[in-house]
Length: 183
Image 1 (cartoon, rainbow, N blue to C red):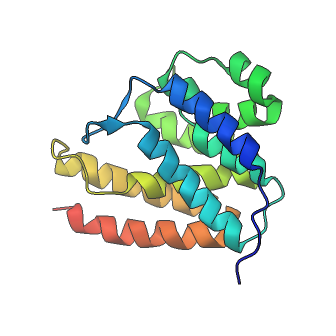
Image 2: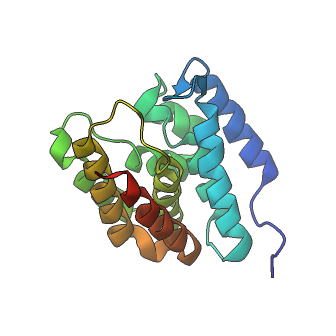
Image 3: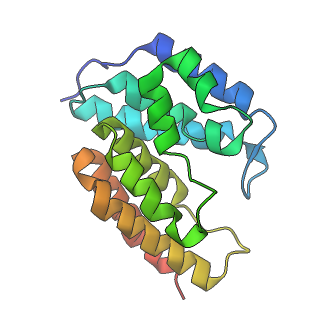
């Protein structure tokens, strides 16, 4: 049985506008569509999970879903996110941001470690982000890259799945389906 949503539409709208402005010139890879599509898909996954399970900080999950790439992919800095949305949201977004100062091979492990220091709502965003990304791989990806992405998805699932039974199941299904693209 679905319950009434437990997150603030006003906070959602505020984060959506902020993210739309921050990502306004970016495109969703391989589609030619606005990057905001990806953020909408991630937030949709979060909202679907919140409709069927309890979360201690639902607004944190929704806001981080919309903002999760602003530090990593735009000129927006941690301080601006903190100023507009508060420390908890800024910390969540920062944890979801890849550390480009470390070797690429260590980034996922570092990211998972930093996410695990946050509340489960931030974990949920990483699960939702990977669910959103497990679509048909871009045509220019090698089989090796596809397989690597599949393996990294399994690692995310293994380390963060306890955050949300709903998202855990969705990600598991996506991982299983993605296996068809490995040659």
